[in-house]
Image: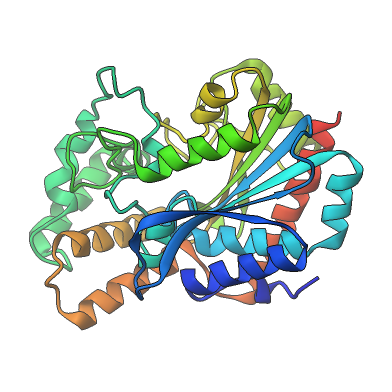
Length: 365
């Protein structure tokens, strides 16, 4: 087993090397889906996939990272640590559970310290039925001019107008309006797109290859940005289905010690969302019983996190920004989704490891 801090990385390129080396040390084969663009430093980008266990296992646990690119700094660390964790691997093997690690669902965002894909799409809002009318977010439409002003940092008028909106409608309404997702402003925040992204299409191929024959599928998708710093909120990542929610709470709830929240009953720190990535499992593996969670680790208070998102998105639109301002914005973005301290990393690994063991017990119960 490696040290906790050693599992985490300072860049996507380093994270990928650590993941590939961990797979090699474990004697596991890597399937690499090469991204069409290059990374921040000219490096190759890929969605790398490793199956630990038999291909015909009836129970499968998926562990994925970097759905929202920059959040991969956390998720990759969890995956690298797990691949080095002999006790964990022995547990899954003994129970007959195969584990599918999907490293860097959105490698472009991971490398470029962005939340979005190279298409400027929020991958976790992109799993829509694009043959049907897409959801309309009228609240975001109202906020769009405020969110991306002409200058950064925002001037006094923009700050005053933003504060007035929050004062009148509340922080929760402000967060929900922005994060719910929208399909109207292609250069805006939380844009869900008007067609499936590369990551969407590639993940579906992965599911078709590895998950099609499993009778029971569990999924832990690792995120950061919401909630108290270091706390991993287990958010049910299933349809509005009482049976699936009951399973998730039985598996991961820890008899109340680690409660499982839901976007459907208002118990989650997340707003109600559509176009979520896990919906793909129902479409690609319709005969499987599916149970999943998003493990959402807290970093900064909501307004600080949203401000970092606004700044980074402003930089995306204003690519001629002064280099020092661009550097500051990227660091602010990284700090909003990855707390680079040993204490925070320790919290991440301990809670992730617990959720992995809980998933295996649930799949075999």
